[in-house]
Length: 530
Image (cartoon, rainbow, N blue to C red; front, side, top):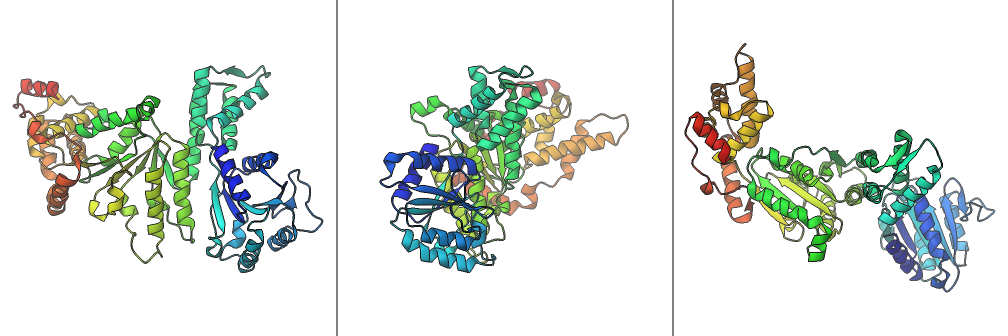
């Protein structure tokens, strides 16, 4: 990836582009790559010097020596130096973007100076490089600025970081190193998504805290990765502890997801399969859509990142789009992973409106483009309760692999869900008349069945000396008004729409065996059948 970055940057410079913005927080790494580029003498017809500017030091050469006797710390003086320098050169500005913001005191003057400078730079052996951790380009300069993202380090770069640290501590008698080839691979993969500096810090932390480095220190590196995700302010690292075994029903969806998990392997690549892209889960609230998103990550043993679209939108012009870019970059950095976007229709509710000057539409466009063009193994799990609020372009094939409808559980699924929740609370499901409870819970969602069990436990707990009985479960069932009854019209319309627009997440109810009779033998027979 770094080679592709250097190649693209060289192309823009040789083609005479006036201003190139490098988006990265890794200043040292970016400078090394630019310096490496200039050392490739065969690439340049005329030699070019490198000058680095910062507000604290002005222009200096790569060795840190002042480039001129004049004070060039002020931005307008720095641009005057560029205008007066007529030989081949790259002028790399660190964090120049704050001076071009609308509220900056001299923003208008600097923008004008740059617009006057652009014609002189075009086609000349002089190029401005802006190095910044975020993308912020004034509207007046957008046609003249080219953007290049510095990708995160490759596996080879992480291996080099690890090798360098190992060499530094190898002679330390208090440090134990046990790095087999498998352990090295595990550590390198755990570092993916970190900047070079963050990887160095994470590895150094592991060495100091454990007085050594082994394959078991992957957990310490993953903890550092969690910190990176939290610092993004948009993505949330979510613990995924519930696999498919903790979800009742949804057999079709489980089978489909297990097949897609195999698609991440190199064997699948060799077979001609692309990386799985994602799935949309639509359905009645409380039927397990969010639980499925968590279960996918647990079943696949991959990090689960929850993406809150509401956090993307910020007050400053252009900041929302940058937040979206940053969040997607972080997700790709920790790939392979599962990116969970919950209640997607709420996050995209402003699309098409005029109140936000088109920010929602631009942010949505960024998301759509990424979903279609992403090459990293980031599997998107999007959930929605109201499909009518989602733009149709989001639902077409190529951005998501499939759309599943998570319906109200059938009788067989309700029995399975009740068994799961009773078992979690240390109750033996065969001790109860589940057939009777299932008949009393027609139209209940999975969340409502869980609440039924909890309410019944409270009833039993309030009666000293009493254990949970079937009567408590039946009483609780009679007191709950399910959503399918209170919002019958909306639920019926959603189910009708799903008949012709989605795949069903659960098996067809017609394939279910009859509910066994209300006897202990019948209950045990049902347990075996389930």
